[in-house]
Length: 132
Image (cartoon, rainbow, N blue to C red; front, top):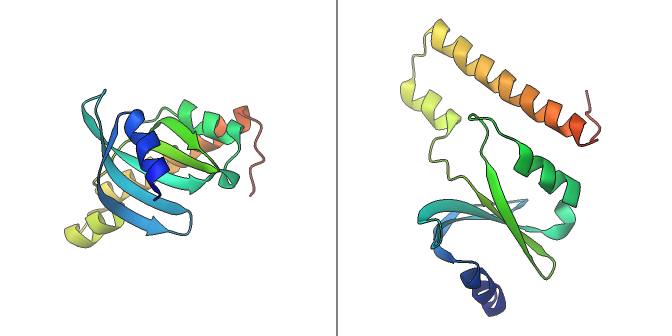
């Protein structure tokens, strides 16, 4: 990350902790927001990866089982998404738990399905095509 980006994000009240993950769509950092006095995830992605309406759709999602996008910043050709920090991971949970009974498995599947339905409904409201 270049010096200008760091200065811009510091002006937004963001203090970097560490890198959480790197992938094909960008880098995710653990950050502390001075104004909110809380720790968040900050996802850094090229602006061409999202449209304004898709960002608005992500902000409008309000489901306790979906990681929340609180706000975003743009600097040059990049987008910085300030998101809820989730320290849990379903794959790690299943591996750690090892023996999940059928009732808990049913709940996990139902929660996953409900989350996908919530996203699909919001995407349709914002005019996105849903592939089947």
